[in-house]
Amino acid sequence: MVVLTVILIAFFLVNTHVSAIETSSVKSSTASAVKEKQEIKDKLQNTKAKREEFLQKKETIQDAKKKAIVERIDLKIANINKKRTDQMTEHLKKMLTILGKLQDRGIDTAAAQTAITAAQTAVNSQAAKEYVLTLSTENKLKADVGGTVKQLEQDLKTVNKLVIAAKQSIADAIKNAK
Image (cartoon, rainbow, N blue to C red; front, side, top):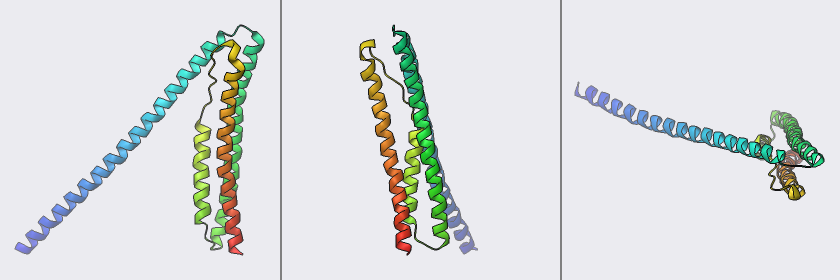
């Protein structure tokens, strides 16, 4: 009888301890999710503020030709980013199907999987970016717009290098299989 009581008490203490650990891990994961959600909200608000500032600055441009060019470039930047990230996503999907076929044959594809995951994460974050032109004065429009375009080009090149590295890792896995 005493042994049964001791076992029940020990079981209760272990379950209480496990519950406390599970509760603390759930709280920490919930806290990190809330923090991540807040960061996304902050970025969205920051982007909205920049967009409003851009629209106000755009209205101050006197030359109608320059104004039309700035509007067109703003739209093109968003379209280019979307188009390029969509293309990269399609390439990564094709790579994943090839990777699946390699895995079906029993080929080690851990390195390729890691490279594809890293590239997909980079493509997703690039697709989420919004490029807003920062305009200072009408005389400096070329430099202002050029800086934003250059930033877009650099970001796309960086992400493209990761996609190329993923492609190369699949090629290496195929070579190692032979």
